[in-house]
Length: 485
Image 1 (cartoon, rainbow, N blue to C red):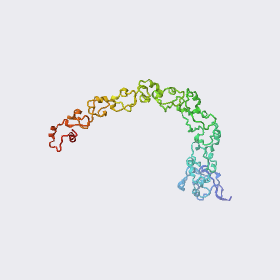
Image 2 (tube, rainbow, N blue to C red; image 1 turned 90 degrees about the vertical axis):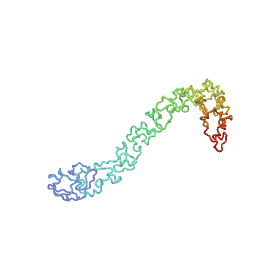
Image 3 (cartoon, rainbow, N blue to C red; image 1 turned 120 degrees about the vertical axis):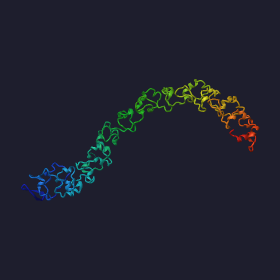
Image 4 (tube, rainbow, N blue to C red; image 1 turned 135 degrees about the vertical axis):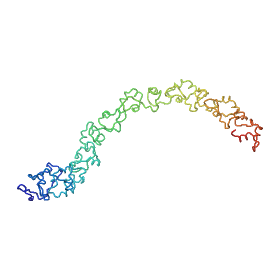
């Protein structure tokens, strides 16, 4: 190495190498004070451009120590602010014999800090590093842009635990499947035995990134709710492995079925969920949707209806169970009451009974009548629903009805409230002198014809019509001119 003589100090010369010193820096901090000099850095560099007054920077008796009150406004004098760890770095870490500092500043971080990632992560060191420390920051946000965001325990895991090439700057191609990183955990998982049960992949079905312990199985195909929640897996998976097993209730609860009274004897179906719930085996409630058990049917013992010794399908009509009640009821059989008991009876109680007389509503005067008043044939089958069919006698006894051939549509004048009073909607106003007996006008023996001349004589009308052109003494002529009376 060629040497050249430099400034004389204390009767001797300091020798500097003529070649450029190559300093590989990975951290701006060092063990030396800011104004001190670490001899491991090599000899001092020339001060050709420095002020001639050495006392501006150095103490009088030590050439290698700067004054305590030495200060230099780096941003003001050079335009380059010193921030973070750079503010505490010794001046000579950057200002040495490598060459002009501005050349290295122009290269960015890579001017002083060799890239350990061999340019695989780009040249923008500030994506991961900042000036306080060379330790990387912001990796969680960076990792969120990859196919494997960091959550839970993965946040604190060293990079090289998943990226073996991290020390050499190789971060690509790391596996994302849990089992590829957690082979050792899989081998240790023996209670339950993961390998024997075929649980060697898709660890995230039970485990979370927060912690490997306290795994929670997502039991979607058979939700573990009610009494099933919190059971030990081996209570259902009795073979020692955790492969698929039957999901029917009876598969696990056959012993409960056998112990239950009447279940086997009455051939109860093995679809336990029809009566039992996952909350608890008791109390049991059967969903009797095919025949709702309401009113008097609620709470009955099953054998009251299911008399065949089993609980299979049985007739659901009333008469099949209530034949005896029908036979005992007065008039039911004698008068051939229909077997559709629900027309009169309800499930609340057998009595009182009320017939659903939908074919002929029983209102007002008809309400409360004995059935035999209308059903006179000895049975309760269909009968005519016209008024005249029941009220022929009333029609015959009424004055003028038969004599004047009144129509049989009784409802034109009468209501179901009472037979009298009757009100007829007369198209000709019956007011004043016209409010007379029907036969005074309807003289022809029926209500379809009338005669005005019965009351209005020729002599009485002639004087009032002596100036009426075309006047004739005729009943129909009177009505044509006087339709309102």
